[in-house]
Amino acid sequence: MSKPVYGLGGRYAKWLISAPPLLYLLLFFAIPALIMVFAAFRFPGDYGGLVPLVDVNPDTGARELLLTAENWRDFLTFENFGRFFEDSIYLELFLKSFWYAGLTTLICLVLAYPLSWLIARSGKKTRDLLVLLVILPFWSNFLIRVYAWMIILGPQSYFSRVLNGFLGIFGIEPVSLLFSQFAVIIGLVYVHLPFMVLPLYANLEKHDMSLLDAAQDLGANAWQRFWKVTWPLSLPGVWAGVALVFIPALGMFAIPDLLGGTNSMMIGNLIKQQFLDSRDWPFGSVLSIMLTLSVLLLAAVAAWAGSRHKKKD
Amino acid sequence: MNKVSRWVWGAAIGVYAFLYLPLAIVVLFSFNDSNLNAEWVGFTLKWYVMLFNDEVMLEAALNTLGIGLVTCVVATVLGTLAGYAMYKWRLRLLPVLVLTPIAIPEILMGVSLLIFFVMLNMTLGLVSITLSHIAFCIGFVAIVVRSRLQGMDESLVEAARDLGASPAMAFRKITLPLIMPGIIAGALMAFTLSIDDFVISFFTAGVGSNTLPLEIYSRVKVPMKLNPEVNAVSTLLMLLTLSLILIVSKVAPNALRAE
Image (cartoon, rainbow over all chains, first blue to last red):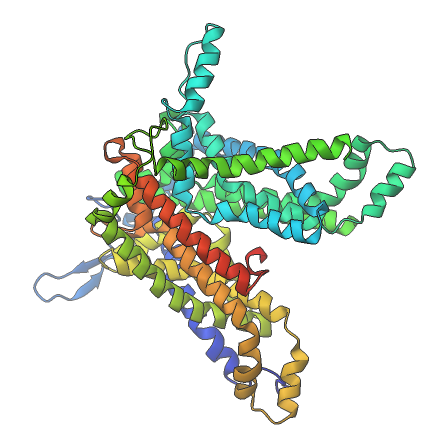
């Protein structure tokens, strides 16, 4: 092993430096995650939580492990997973969440594309300012941003009154905007939009403008130039944005909780319900595992799609 | 300006309006002399006065700041170590542990930490919130620090070593000052993320403890408790975050763009 030339050297430096964060994250991220996976195979306790595996002797205070090689069937089960697949409402809820997240991603893409294109084509100074303007609202408190839409979509807001007045002209019954699927989608788009703009902009910024000039010289109109040159080249950025919007949107629970009605629940709301309201941890863990698997699958697809387009460049 | 670019400008301005109007409305109504967030009645500061006499809010604010400060210090130290280790060595486990909490939906971390703390028989409260916040902030600090290290000119460190500096001295005199903007940016990021966090706090807070986002949530959720005081506290929180972001962008202009 060659002696390191720069930075902190020494044989143990690698371990001394990486051990503290490693141990912390093992303890407060990896182990809790593994415990959750384990919990998915256990039975719910009588008063919520889980059926205990350890018995404490009331006289001696000694702890005794109840789980043995013979009786593990009394403590571990696949039932919780069975329940997920038995009742179609859970799969339907997953599909609905995918639909919400997908629609959110699509709307974000449509809104973000022209904006990112403009930012990428601006001069250096303007560009930095425009990017900062996209990031700033993202750094304000998440709940405040959701609350803002509760105000705008509320029944007494200007927006609702003008809209319902307009609908009234055509004899349409007034609509309630808040506590609806519409409100959930708006909230999801609003919160995730910057995640689409940033990767798109980072990609569009690198495009070689002479390609567009060449296409124009060869007789391509504006639409063809976009569709045949800019769009294919921007696909890695698009896929990065899709992953960055879709994944957090899929696991969201606060937005449907605050802006949605009873019919706009998402996976996150069900998970929250299992853990905090009905206190069925095993089933809550099953739902969390299913969400994790969905996220991993999506991330893999997005990474694969993105890299496939990159190779073509 | 041709037709296409006029169209693009129009769309872009529309998107900026979409991003800023809602926040502007929250700020505007914090000065509105009406109980309802519906119509402009007249200017008042009474919601701010009410806010500063609201002991529940003040306690929540104090908790939030305390959690934020501890999180900031611990996550910055651990995150800097992680960022340095990830930059310098090919590690397998550490990058996975550092990056996954950022990539997965927050709720997953929230519920797994809830199970974990309850199984440890730990009383949920300020300590469990802080421990959880540190866990998800480490990654953000690590990424900022690593990207700063990647932009560093290594020959400076080599030169210091050639001139006889020990590895530790070269680190202290060369590397550390050079990556300091990244560390400061990471620290401010950790602080901001902590004081803004709702989801993970929601699961790890238990009954007795309260933070500002949790208090805002409970007031927004129960309309009876809702009044423009929430707008006032939101406005102040936005001001705080805004000033932190301005500091970060001065200290490390590219830090916030790190992905």
